[in-house]
Length: 116
Length: 111
Figure 1: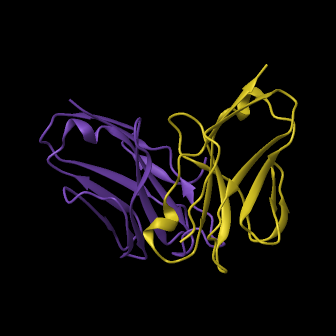
Figure 2: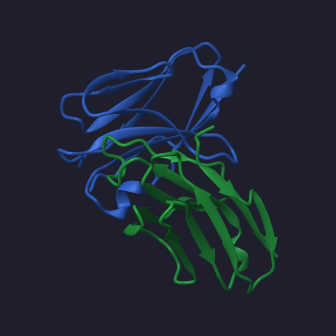
């Protein structure tokens, strides 16, 4: 158990809908990361927040948005969903915002999103 | 920005030592090298991290030569449960790309 909690574990929704994925980082971690993993794309970095502020942005679509709240939990909002958004979405956390440099990133077990 | 190159796949037998090498020719002075393990439908799990020479923990060793242009993850006496994808990450340039996983190495341990 990494200490990173993600909900829901599974979600099935229709095209055009909007969903929110939630992440609680490990106790004491200030940085939260979101990743998307689909069968044909591998692990794609979406976005990172550090202590409530956006720190780095990867291949995140404009239909997706995220935020980190004062209690450090984070939400990833996915809107106007398409079939291709079906994937496993991982949240990760770390103590600092320095990415991989001397800094361990811990991953949650993911949220399975199926768009039908 | 350090790009990494790893073998796509490797096969091994139970009880053998496995070495997975990652090339990172453009590694920068401040970059650390980190390895993760991922099982199907699970989040990547931190294995080991190093900056230079050799690092060892309870599950693996990481060998980094003096020029730091490559690194080798060594798994002693693998078992069937070590079958997974192994990712090498390098970077500390403050950009999003340091957090990007490559294709990884699919290690298959055979009985």
